[in-house]
Figure 1 (cartoon, rainbow, N blue to C red):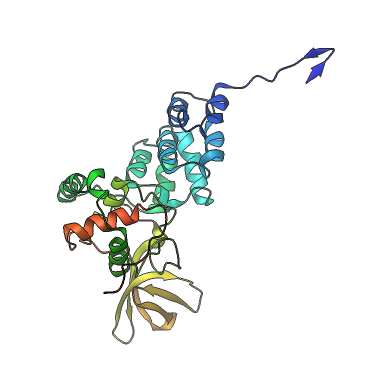
Figure 2: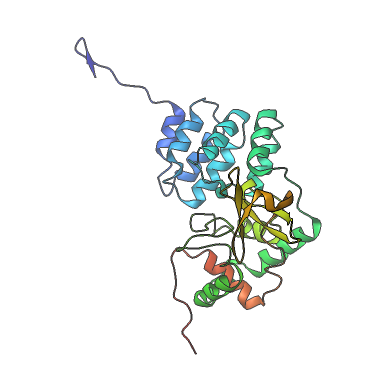
Length: 283
């Protein structure tokens, strides 16, 4: 820009300079971490504008930074509520980081989105340690991804989809942090520790003596649809004797423990795959 024959150069702020380097494959994560040491009020907006186009690793780094200050956390939670940041991107560690800020507004937003968060039981922590060792990168490189897809179809496919289809009960997994082993272990080994409200289990007792469990959806004054693993059940309100929303996930515990070590390895490797793979050839 020129004024009175002189060139006027717009001064770039330090946060804006760092954000501009987020896409850099070498400097990106360092720039994100450096942003955490700044205190500019525009940091959340600048970072969230880059979020969708960033890699999974950079997204995790951004979430760590955005969860480090109450005002930044509020901006992050607002983005989650507005679906600008997918709720399933927020793992249990980030949720607990948000609660550790001890900010009443942040805590209220967390509870509105996920309900009350409980600590992971000691036995599940031990399992996570065991599986981190068992499912180390070297082991996953030996995985049979096609078998992993078959295991997924048998154990997870009733509720989730990956790469294709529409999920019935659980979230669609294609865009989640599938390559993050801790994220997978936390959600599979202790699915009820942090549960988005829309995936909490509803228990319904009907007037004709049935007990039904699933996710309540498509509710009107006249009735609702209960999504279950075996299909959708449409109920009139007059058919419902009692209805209870639990703090538990509809996802059952013990999934990984029920698999053989080879199937466990293949499933986790398939979950981390960046693209679809063929099913095993028929024998």
